[in-house]
Image (cartoon, rainbow, N blue to C red; front, side, top):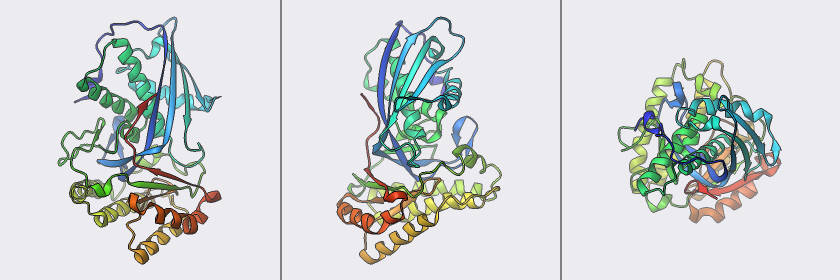
Length: 363
């Protein structure tokens, strides 16, 4: 499928007003997307676990307005009007107008809230943009006035992922679950740069109900925006090798997921996390996104794993927080380890226990 497949035919119904609500989860990449081309196209493929508890709930109220010359909307976070959110939404609307041609026909009241604290340092753009995209797709379905077949439902999931990507790249991995691939990869059938797809191959029982506890090392604003970070890859001396490494790791994971090799999984996931930070440390300008407590946590995890033969491991986003990943059967022991050894390195001792989820839900 190409972008043109998402340009709709004329709608069969006129809607004066209505309301739609979606809950959409955050996600955590195992193979990292870092570096993008024009139009939010990734330089390399990525794969992520969809989360369950960390999500954004968005309600879009829409009402027909006079004239269709401009976008008209208000944004609220937890009931509070957010003027500073508007430029990002306006940019998003401009990018997607061709595919969502009713945008200028309505005034939208966008009400959003997160199940995790807004200042927690967890990126809300993935869950937020995917929830908004799903609301817009639901309005389109209403305008078409049809009951969806399974094939059409699949099409609209892809369209929501495609739209979400134009708001925030990783948001395209938050529409479905539990394992989502984004970016074309020769070994993964159906993979696309344009939208995220469910991982199509066998996944061993070892990776079912995987746990993710997010250690909130630093709740401050990100030191460097994702857009700036991605742009630093354009002239990066190690960029091409990094993109190739991501393809190689995606290929390795196919066998890992099939065979249930958790040790190989740990090596790939931790290497990917550290590579992401190494790319930032070797860019120009350069950034160190970890904090001293990030390193303390990593060393504690390595020590605990060596001592107990646990299958716990870590991954990182482009920041200081640590995602602690572990199999469900180790939950009791690992959570106790987090409480007694790792929480002390978190800001105010805060961490969030989550697990793999299965995608967005219409409420």
